[in-house]
Length: 357
Image (cartoon, rainbow, N blue to C red; front, side, top):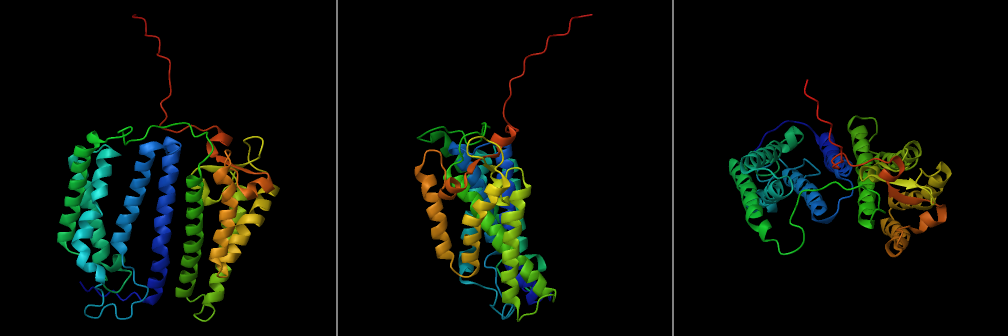
């Protein structure tokens, strides 16, 4: 399917980094909403909630993959066909199978609503594939057809039916897949903290890349000094996201950790950590890791983070090495503001019946 739209390489350069940024932003908003509604994600309901996020990311990846970095030769005969196109029908069916399962097991939707949802998602993914990322690319680079929409809808129906038949036969644990809200007061586990860190890393890296590509496409930055501009933007974005934002937020957290409802507190009481402690923690952990990544030493940055996390993995209070040195503690946001999940069932005394007049 060839649809010349004449958009140019500049728009493609922006799209290559903006698409992952949009996906990470959507994941952060989803996790923030889940933690605000239900508190700590725990047990099988928590795993089902994370599975819903992964299913959404997989569907987005299917809609845009493979995202070409250049338009050279893209619109030539066969230029938009990749080696994965032979598996297109299988992928169209398989990528929407979890949607049907989760619609039944996690979101408790009926067959009609699930079918409509699957058809809508399959049609949206097919439109993105068939129009070259909604017209950003000068032509389509991935195969799209009504058959893919039909197979995606069939995959959704198959997933719903499998959940309907297999979940009652679940051989272990609680079979309930939908969440129940719980107060979020226990120490956050390492997986939750790592998830917030990964969101921060993605927002920083792809956000800086998107800004650099947009400046280059607009002619503000020339092709020659683009590398220096990217380094400057990376350092500037790290200063904003890693230094300024935590200092002005009440939970003293970066955006990614705020998305999973974490907070940086004093060691002895659940109040926001003082700004000098936050700056010391940034100078010992965040700043060295950022500099190492920017200047091409990502493996050393990973080793630094692992050294910090090693104490949190073995200590019962989950305190990292840098937190011990700086006198800070990673706790949940609910501990410092006293908030409760919005879906938590609260007891209310029955009203006195009105006396008849």
